[in-house]
Length: 364
Ligand SMILES: Nc1nc2c(ncn2[C@@H]2O[C@H](COP(=O)(O)OP(=O)(O)O)[C@@H](O)[C@H]2O)c(=O)[nH]1
Ligand SMILES: [Mg+2]
Image (cartoon, rainbow, N blue to C red; front, side, top):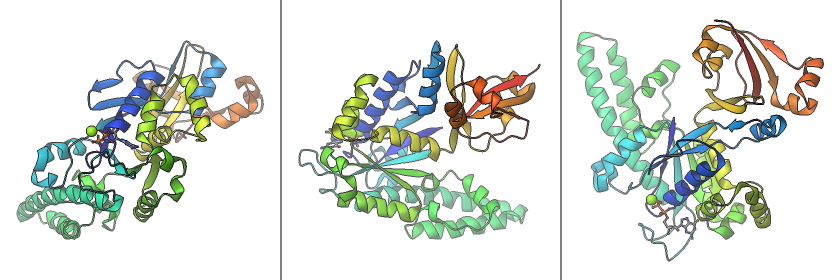
């Protein structure tokens, strides 16, 4: 589950990526912080895990992590192969979601490939490249479905669906906004690995002054308005500042942000939002050896969640002892929570919730 960082050249992608990778290297004893120069692993900030860790003082604390890929080189004409375009588009195809970095700052020392700052124009350029690349995929899909339909009529519907989609894309619309009707059709579309169907977050990259007062920055508001129409999120960041913050030791970070009057770093917000965008949630385990956040897909049931820890936990699942994080925090200790009856015993059909603190009972 990777997120691809995309955007025009010189909008701050690599600066943001470096901030992310540095934050990862510093925040966790993770053995694989930088997998390759363009792929970085970062810990997902989680105040609940911080609390648990404070509470148990374990030997080890392990956060949830996600991967980001810095995808350089998308320019006008990429879908036609311009500037290694196809290679970069293929990189995006391997990602599950997209962080689209949009330049929302003026700086005459940083060249803008299009000559001026204009967030909506920039978004449009990238969108069109993704959409045109999808058109090619969809054309191929239509041909395949049409020839399959000669043998089996059921493929006629697939050909028809993808033809409608192609026309929609050709009008400059993304697959995200395509209204395809029922769930079966949606599932069919999902098999096509379309770039413009991937969930997206806009990262509005502001300068320092802009970031401190982003709600009054016209560039930011333009992106926010577009995002709202698409049902997407926009997160204000100052990549340059984030890169500086990421190099600070954890204990200095909070003070630094406070000095600037910023409650939470844009990077932290972006990472958390990215986790949610991927449809992921965390459950937690706590103890004197290790406190840990475990990543599961939203909607996962208890046995499969247990299987993340060890396959035996899933195979021999008996039940899960579960308490909501807020309940534990309120009670102050596990024994107090038990007395109040807040530790629940849940069975095989239990759907895990974000922030559940869990002890699995199993027998193999
Ligand atoms: N003024 C200003 N410059 C920035 C900001 N973010 C990035 N830059 C500068 O913009 C240039 C291009 O950034 P880079 O991250 O390499 O862009 P990329 O091509 O999108 O990867 C670098 O010189 C950065 O220092 C920002 O928030 N404010
Ligand atoms: Mg770059």
